Structures are given as structure tokens and as C-alpha cells.
Length: 563
Ligand code: AMP
Image (cartoon, rainbow, N blue to C red; front, side, top):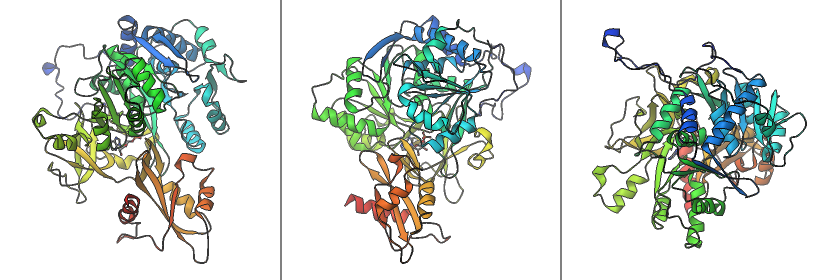
């Protein structure tokens, strides 16, 4: 079993350090227990002692619904921690998860950080190359994988050797050389948590790179605790012990936007939907469990809205107070569509690097008497910084832009749950000398401090909440013998938010069909990342410095799509 965690192990890379201007003379200090650590141990202990009766409902891959409690999950977390420690998992070491939103994932959330290790959530939708890079970069020692994801895992295992493989089995057996989750947890006595400093790393998530490889963000105990507290505030996501929360956003996406920890802290009930996220399955759970708060990317809610419109009387959603939607821009039509059914969407903006919550779009009291039109205009924006988060934007001329809703600039952010660097020191250019993180989102800011994303400085396509690197697609397309040049842009898509479109210039005298090029991409990109639209053009417009002028391509093809 782990004892006190030594200080030399890696710390979370967050903006934890005190800011300038803090008065340090002893004589001026307050007289409080300031050394009490803001550690996730407090979250799990609260769940064990005060919120243990709260339900955790989950749906298995076969569709069956089961019930447990927060207390039971916390108790099993202590056994899981003891099991992992018996395997030799020590302080600061990463334990990967490849799991859905399921109780074992919640148990891993509650077990791994308090034992002093780091939970590293892997996204099973990524291509094997990316996953194996990520697992190797994080030096994951062990992995907990759901039986339904074993095919993804097998491909990954060929590239990266985990020392320990723990399988959550629904059939009761694990493949050779793997441990079965239930056997591991039941074989051990609950762990007594060690003392852990609040700046120690607790969790890890990778973010897609515009160019180059994905980069690891290491959350600290302190950053997760503060993020959970602010997430739960009434004007942010508003999580109370009276809530029943269904995170549709996967627990491998920026910790499901912090909701599992916020729910455990507040003592809210949780509904974990497992892998079935089609509209009917989501609606069945929302109605059947009388969910009050839910969260996910716009794509999910578009199909949910369509299902409601088709069968308006089928689901009783009268308990649902709000739907937190973010990860991609929320179209105004989605806000209006749910309003017609008495359901309220709140838009949130954030990033893996911001834990993820950065801003929430709550209409301020100043706009209480604004017209319906103006209120929709406001709600379709990305929102106002949540407490402790500071936002600003810098224009092309390098100056900070005024908050006049006209000027545009790249959004910068800082705060106690914003990354101060990436694991291994990659991507340092995104962090300014005066302690801000450059987001790559281009925004306008209005007089309320509300941001509106107008463009993206980073060369990425976001489809259904998942990233596709334009640059990686272009590089592989240009490696095709018939292709002289390739530029990939994002085009709006009603269902997925964005889809990639590849504009191709063929070499003289060469031929290739769209299918040939798609075939060429297969194998190195996941199927959903391959562009449906491949357009052959004479030349790719360029800027004065010779770069691809993607704005012009976007104008040309986005208008063509609209027509
Ligand atoms: P990720 O790190 O994968 O969570 O992606 C973060 C990025 O998603 C942001 O930098 C934005 O480009 C985009 N994003 C997140 N929320 C929103 C939103 N509400 N509207 C538009 N884009 C968003």
C-alpha cells in the first residue's frame, strides 16, 4: 500500500503558483488552516461519509439498467486502489482507462488520484497510431479497458506494452494475460488514503495537435477541486445534491467536463449511459431517470431534438432543467428548437487545457428586458468567463482588443485550472511570458465580457466533438503520387458541426479519383476522419507570404455548400 507521497514525483502542470502581488510577510497573513490540501481525497471522503446514499444508475452495453450508490462506488474505489498498488503502481505513475461512462470509470476517477497515481483517460475513437503515441508519451503502466473495447485495445497493445491489463468483463472472463476487474477489486482490502499535496498530478488528458503530436495536459488535485467547485456554482453548470446528472459527454473528454467530480462533491445522483448514445437511448434515460442536468456536444442534441420533434409525446422530460452544450458552436436553431419543447440549452466554452470550463453563456440581468431576438443572439455566443478565469484577446497588430463586439483577436486565458505547460515541455509557444495560454480561437468580445468565436487560428476540423487535423490530412494527401497540392478546410455540417473538405490540385498529366484518394488515406486515419468531399481545383489561393489562403477556399466552398 502506498504511504505518504514523496515530493519528487511529477506535479500537475497547472497555473497553481501564487500570482504576483501576493503579500507574503507573516505579519500580514490570515490565521486560517491554509495548508489544508485541496485534494481529491476530500471529494471521495465526502462521497463516502455524507453522500453515500445517492444513486448511481448505469446502463450496460446490452441495454440493461442497474443501480448502485455513490457510497458503493467509493468503497469499491478503495479496493481498486489497493489492487493497483499491489500490482506495483506507485506515486505519480499513470493508469490509463479505456472505458465508457460506466461505474468502473467513476471508480477509477475516485481511486487513482487519491492513491497518488494519475488517471489517464484514453479516447477509443482515435486512430491506433495516435493512441499508441499517447500511451507511450504518458508512459502508461497499466490500463483498465472495457470488454467492448478490446478490439481497439488489441491494435494498441501491438504498439505499446502495458505492464498490467485489467478488463471490465461483462461475460465474467478476461482474455489471456489480462486481469479481470472484479477479481482484482474483490481480492483486496480497502486502501487507507495517503497524504497528498494539492499540487500533485491527479489526472491526464491529451489534446489533438494542430501540427505534430497530441500533447498531454496534467491536471493537479488543486485544479480539479477548484474546477469542480466552480462548475457546481448556480450560474455555471449549477450542480446540487438535488440534481440527477447525465453526462453524455464521454469521461475520456476532459473528464466529462468535470461533472463526475462535481457530482461526487455536491452529492448529486449520476446516470451513466455506457456506449449507447443514439437519440432514443439518451431520451429513454433522460425521461426514465428524471434527469435534471445533462451535457454533451451539439451533434448529440441535434439528433435528440429530431427524435423529440418526431414523437413529441413519447418522453416526459419535465424534470430536465438544463442542458449544457459545448465543445463546438451551438447553432441558434438548436436553442430555438429545444425552447419550443420547454427545454433550455446553456452554451459552454472550454478546452482540454482549461480543464475544460472557461466560460458559460448565462444571460445577465442587464438583458432581462431585451428582445427575444437579442436574447437569442446572446445565447448563441460562447459566454462570460466563469469565476477565477480571466479572458482577453489580442489582434493581428499584437494589441489587446477592446470589448466592443467588433474587433477580433486570438483568445488568451488564465486561471487556476488552466494548463501552464504540456507534459514533456511540448508546445511551449502557446504560453505567453506573462502567464497566459493562447487558445487558437479567434473571438470578438462584447461589453458584457461575452465572447463570440468567429474563427479558429488552429488548423483543425471539429466533427461531432472530435478533432481532425487538416495538416495531417494534407500531408498524407500530398504524398499521393498524383497530388501536387492539397488544402483541407472545415465546412459547416448540420449533423456533425463541421466536416473536412479536401481541395486538390493534381500533378500535370496525372489522374486520381476521390475514391483513390480516400483509399490512400484509409489505414492512417480513422474512418470518420476521412473527407467525403474531395474537390479538384486549378490552384490553391495563397497569401502574400505563400501560405494556403484557406479563408478564400472556405468562402468558395462554404457558399457552394450553402447553395
Ligand atoms: P478540446 O480541447 O478538444 O475540448 O477542444 C477545445 C476547442 O473546442 C476550443 O478551443 C474551441 O475551438 C472548441 N470549442 C469548445 N467549446 C466551443 C463552443 N461552445 N463553441 C465553439 N467552439 C467551441
